[in-house]
Image (cartoon, rainbow over all chains, first blue to last red; front, top):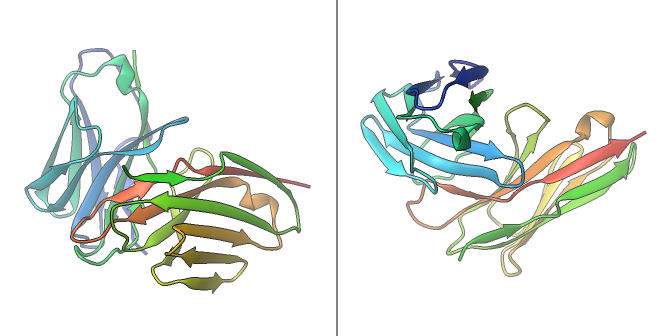
Length: 114
Length: 111
């Protein structure tokens, strides 16, 4: 079974703090994704990575950065957290590049910025 | 632009059949996914269609018509545990690793 884990289920941070969200997958997947999910807005892609040290912006990258130093780990960084970044953050991974393999999701991190 | 439409909410009765529709307009098409998401949990993969027709998987079936830009998810013999949000997602053509996601349909199954 594919397993995608995220470092925290719940996180509370203060405005202006630097926040790190970690995601690890154990199935040697090439692709990893970071989404945020908000009521009425659905899943929105922040960044994704298709290889170590490779990244591409998603639909809403502003205020975020990512790091992928190892194939199994994909980190999302909030450089200076703001209240509008309060959300559920979901990490996902998928196998392959050209083939549309399904994405496997981690349990999510509910981040509150106060 | 690229767009996926699903009904926001649906209600059904335990033991019944429900059909959740999804229409899409995307630049290119390379497959459509259905995911299930229970409240407070992560989405889990249900089905994938790339060719026209019906794919059956136990109580769940998914249908695709590429010419109409239309898919549906059919849930039979509904159970209370099927109460969840159902997300439709489309992969565009070419070397594009991203999925385009619908907002999801929240299904409530009542006894």
